[in-house]
Length: 302
Ligand code: ATP
Ligand code: ZN
Image (cartoon, rainbow, N blue to C red; front, side):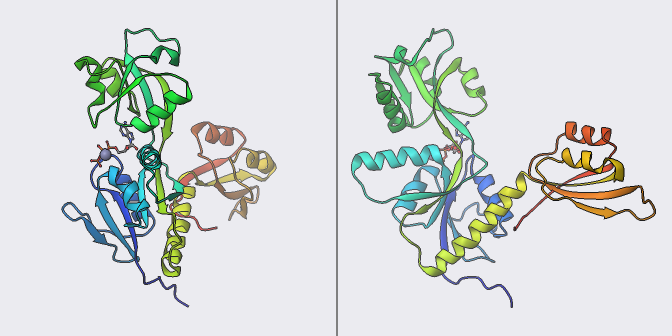
């Protein structure tokens, strides 16, 4: 029996051009979904899977999914949370569900202030002007802390607001911290931690689309699981086999095979659910292992 794909097509929104674009496309590719590069196109049909990809600004993705224009979206949880809070405060209907947190786009929304300013606690923000592109998340945080401050909404270049005299402090996204450093700012509070996420419209999908989504999720889980997993192969003296097994990180039942031409040793193959570090390999070697190979795993289906 051959595997047949559903006919009805899912629609997925991803960022057209920005920090999440390459990782989103790479993830689709790793899930076996082929889309040709789309510099000028807004909508692309995958050739080998019932999914159409819509390329948009990241800020539009939550709304497209919540309104049901797209079934799925890949977006930063920071943008998602801000949009959800805004909808809630406006009383607009339409919900979403986070299907999976993804392992890219990681960043933090931080309150930062000019380097030279003293800071002891969040209470120091009382009466200050806070510039941000995330007014909802920022206001919620300040309210939760019982701090009365003025939130100034800016759509970009938030980090220069203190220098321009537009605000006293900022609340902005940070990943490495180099942008803050370049602008002589320092982060003092993290108010939201984010990664990209795969989201879907809350309403149930029709059976065809639900089936297609099930396949996507299974592949995605396989890709994500494989990313943290390694295949390790080594030769072990029979006498130290038990000790060597103990050093294999996160492997349950290694395969032990005879070695042709040497009955004092065996070959050990194991799937390790954790990264294999040099230190682990050195411990294995010390325990008597030799010919140690560590290989990446591309896909997994358990
Ligand atoms: P668009 O043109 O689509 O509106 P943008 O300029 O708003 O793009 P990007 O800068 O490409 O957005 O960031 C997209 C997402 O990447 C952010 O919302 C966030 O989830 C994630 N991200 C990760 N690291 C950072 C960072 N250091 N600064 C900003 N965003 C980051
Ligand atoms: Zn944006």
